[in-house]
Length: 427
Image 1 (cartoon, rainbow, N blue to C red):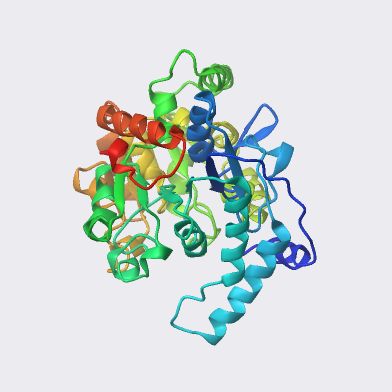
Image 2 (tube, one colour):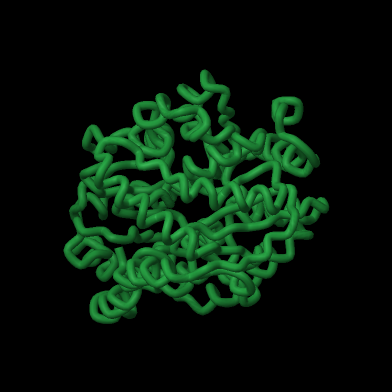
């Protein structure tokens, strides 16, 4: 973890928050990493602000909360996010200390639960949506009859400690959300196998950020503005036969330089006259737990790949926009492969850990239908995969059923009052 993050937590411990939470029907939550897109001078959360905007358009007011260790708040954020930094920091430190003393057990934090309880009581919110709502938030919500949903933001797999049956099926019901809002059928299967028996819904709504750009609504000002600006920037890139996207992971200690293996670097250099290579940094490398990696990457890029690839355009614009214009995707192990698959783009992953029993079911659904493929991290295997897949792009995944489910979800969230019987709308 970045030293600056640790420093921020320690400083925040001495803050005493005074925050105005107005009344709202829905509470949304995200981390700085989730608020990854800068639009009109404000950081936008693709997966949370998208439904929040849809709700606000319908007259349903939302209050957004930034999770622990967040710096994007107030006027910096699209949703005017609130961040009780002091209380969250103090709760986090006591939670970590409790975890040391209670090894093998989850260190449930009464301090954190009380923070969420106060926020829910002041706002009067009856529904909550966001990335990985904590056990403490779920507990506070359930005591108040508030409906809570987890919004998928990456890989969902049997071996993932937040979603797998082995990790969560036996947890107290009050510490679990009421629904998992997932992107695809594979993710739906993972949680539904254990959550349904506990009265928890798994609702496949698709990736709503992806949906906005794959089929842009003429009235969606953000999507159309961004697509227009991208077209102008992309016109300045070299004209090549095909385009290949390389997505980076943060904190990748298994790669010597931390970013791109030597074999892939050699492939990029020798084929840059034939293929347009785009490199995309992880949001955490821009603002989050690994911001120090961006400067290191730029130094690496300038010394090894300058003139053979471009990283700024692919990092600046939303991933769905980039995926509309690429033919292949290569990564060490990034969950970008899910969004690529839904965009009709095949991915090659090289991390040998994805073959181990603790990870071999990651991306299982898209690996099973051939959209995600494991290859050896060698120059020969990369050359062969690119040759096989240079004309492999397919139409985007059919979102008809996902769109229908999302419309029902928005209708439910926009309906005032208690969420005691969501099945009346969600079924």
